[in-house]
Length: 117
Image 1 (cartoon, rainbow, N blue to C red):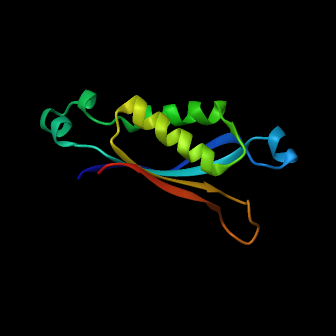
Image 2 (image 1 turned 120 degrees about the horizontal axis):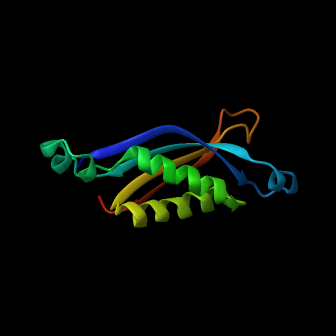
């Protein structure tokens, strides 16, 4: 199985359960891996047959700008579904890190895997 990945994508969004968090934007760091058959794109050097990570990254930025969730878990689930539906991705792994949420940790968050490999 081929994989396309995006690592360390930073997005600003409204995220958090506390009242003070509801009025600010916070940074989330995303690491993603997608199942994708790269052979057709590589055979013809054809971007239209590739999973265009620039387009995926742009879509994630728009999603984050519009999102207003309390839980990182909800952010991850909804984003995973949006990406799978829009880009016809059959499997993905998504790690969402919320830096600074726990002062003694560099980050906390969730990692999910959805779909079939």
